[in-house]
Image 1 (cartoon, rainbow, N blue to C red):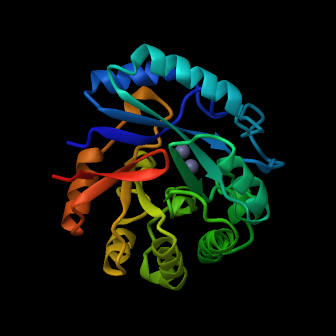
Image 2 (cartoon, rainbow, N blue to C red):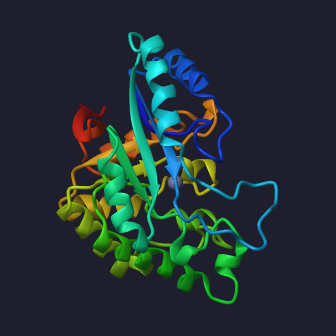
Length: 275
Ligand SMILES: [Zn+2]
Ligand SMILES: [Zn+2]
């Protein structure tokens, strides 16, 4: 059984209403030994003109308040569960210097780098897909990820690497690794070279893809290229999705030939056996 969830959100993230304490109590009741918070820091989050006005417009993290709240919770629950302090950075090519400085200025256990807004548009909104084919839109998502990796790579894990397919008009019905292998292989080779772990994010199941993000063929390809470092995260924004489908993910990883999954403490990987 996987006893760590290292991609979770709480009220410190703009799009989350679950208090940190609620998430901690859930993790304890599930018998986890490790819970890592990875709150959103999406500097320059784009404002879509057609956005639902009830949705948030800013994804900036109040890092000092987050640190303070975390330390209070650690004081209260630190003897019952290992709590880790992470962040999920929304990558944008022009933010490299800012992000470099940001990660160096705070004592994070884990930094996840995620492509949320290719060319500064959120694929969550249909605008991203308007006036072009799905293939063009997905290709742009991957090429923007490559651009970001060229300028900034001081993060530990690449989050939900094919996240864009959650929101495509046909989701993953016509999506295959092969169709985008030219770009995906570049990303995988870059993260292997830079010692960045591949995250297996169970949000794909929550979004009805029937697969994690990235899809199984990408996980297999990563392994065949020499990738060994994988992390498992639910991306839970509510307690009920904590550890969502982790048994399925563990099975996939074992079938792909992985023996360990990693958590990060003080930005260093610590390996736990699978199976
Ligand atoms: Zn994300
Ligand atoms: Zn997330």
